[in-house]
Length: 77
Image (cartoon, rainbow, N blue to C red; front, side, top):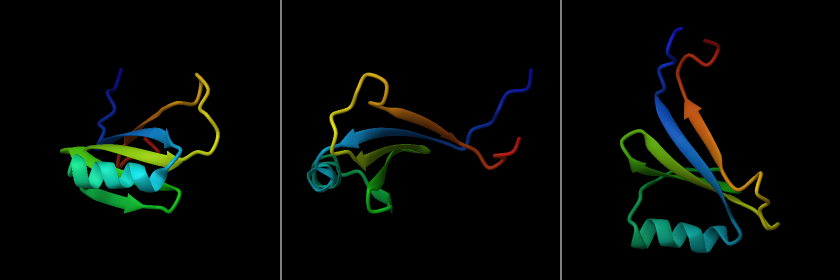
């Protein structure tokens, strides 16, 4: 079995108030923002680990509260 080499990891969580969430992570936790896609914002937590928040008006269900994403250069591999 071949092991996949990951370049980064992103955990996505829903945010009912994305602006308040952004203020907290930038000013209280001092996490640097790395990407703002409008409805989703990603912050670097440490090294190649990130946390992202996506605007969500609906309350999350048990099945869609979080998304774990592994990023790798060799996507097709």
